[in-house]
Image (cartoon, helix red, strand yellow):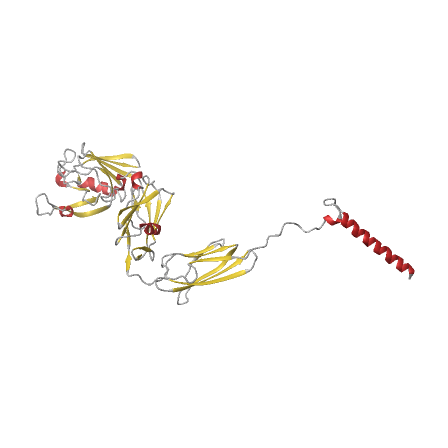
Length: 397
């Protein structure tokens, strides 16, 4: 018993010594008190996911054409469901990284939608968000839009992209936001309003042959000002073909055709006579016609009055809204190459007119020089190249 007591006493002394040694260790000396001490830096805690929706829950009078979107912060979306009042799913697109979801195809008027999003945070915990919003009722006035191109067309290097609305647009910025122009390769360009119902997008320089152009006039359900909303979307994709340029010289009475900057043909012409001189400048081919009646009444001179006419031609290509065409004119073949005798149009023989029309296409460039006429107005037809780029990009009122 005494031995046991002595051993127990030594054990207490050893324990006390150990405690004293621990208390007297210097920081950084390698003593036992420096090892395993808590770090002064606090470990970062994983954050829960945050879900944001547009429109916000409870929102009303939402324009049907505005996008619906969901984004996740500190996590990723795993499922998003948008349902209409009938409970049907309205499909959207979930980003590959789960960071966002979006629907842009257009909703109905005067309907309530339910948006449910499920996401997992950096902390590994799932979160579900449910919201509702209501779209504006059917508007009293809608505006449609038309394009100057057809799906799958091949167009010329001077082709302007023209959007013509069915009535005045009072919110031009909203309209421009709804008009999407995508090109491959990427091409610099800009919008310019020529009238309250017409806006044109043109590149800074002529299009590069082979360029792919996609136009999406996504105006459905978008407010365009004055209480009007877009009626429906319009879209088209076209390709820029060879660079075809024509120069008609009123002094030499000759027309020169080049393809990709290489001259391919020269032919005799006759253009506007004194009093009917052809405006000088760079036109853009607008439309082609096999069988067309040239009518002076279209520019204010009735056919049954002095100087009026109504004449059928076999081949005609429109260059302006004011009535300038290049067309077949067998009656003036004797003057072609020698003198100007037309009412303003560029006269060609039947064969030459057909050859040129078969070669050319919408958007090709046609320049008139030495005609003695006034300068072509940039707003006459598709004559956008009459304006230099600085003037084109100057805001209009």
